[in-house]
Amino acid sequence: MDLRALRHFVRLADVLNFSRAAEQCAVTPSTLSREINRLEEECGAPLFERNHHSVSLTPRGQEFLSFARTVESAWREFRNSGTEKSLSGVIKVYCSVTASYLILPEILTLFRREYPDVEITLETGDAANAVQKIEDMDADVAVAARPDHEPGRVVFRSLKEVPLVFICPKSYEIRQGPLDFGIIRGYPFILPQMGMLRKRTLQWFHERGISPKIYAEVGGNEAIVNMVALGFGAGVVPSAVLRHTPAGKDVTVIPVRGLVKPFDVSLCTLRRRLSESLISAFWQTAGNAIRKNSTP
Image (tube, rainbow, N blue to C red; front, side, top):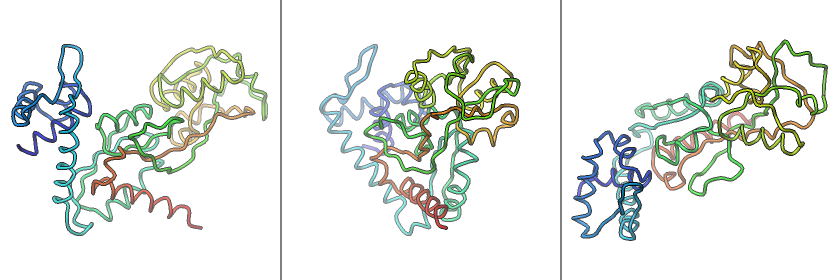
């Protein structure tokens, strides 16, 4: 039984899809299938139930998964044993474009200073995908808005509270506020396609009995700001986006009474992976950065 096959088994058990697991393991689906078949022969029992539509773990597969995770974790700890300064390897970080320059710079600077031999891979994309990236193990850690209902296997560490604001094109005539929320009724709205911001915005409308006139649905906060700046309608975005997006200067913040609930921007990872050396070190570094910023 080799460690490579164990790692590939764990990845397949996490995503329950041969094609996706093979892609994440950088092997072909047929190679992955052969590795799983060999493991099943060695275990003397099927580890997965397979049909044309789904893949699921058998009871024996569930037992073997627990064993495989223990071995994988022990191997990582052994490989990275020694002083913390000797940590090496690759850690994959996922966040939005905004978070990459608002939240991460100090954390990455501190981490690089403490662990110069660790390679950091940073992927930026729609913030709405962050938690899913963690659950699918496409990223080791991610920066995400803490959801109202947290997935049980994902753990969060608060980094920063970010207000959400209503914005409109400069061409709209807006009085000095605070303004009654009724002013929003007549505006076409640009909404995110998915994620926490969409849920919070629609919840705000629902609580006030407003049916928003949706003009467009886009991916990413920056796309909302750009659409609003071009005059297509109003939107809701994290306030920090306006300070770091070129189009931010071409929109106006609407001073509406009763703001949308702010984001608790957090670092997240799979709970069971907090014991891994690299992730534990990154988690601790984020905590040090928070304490540094909170010190008068």
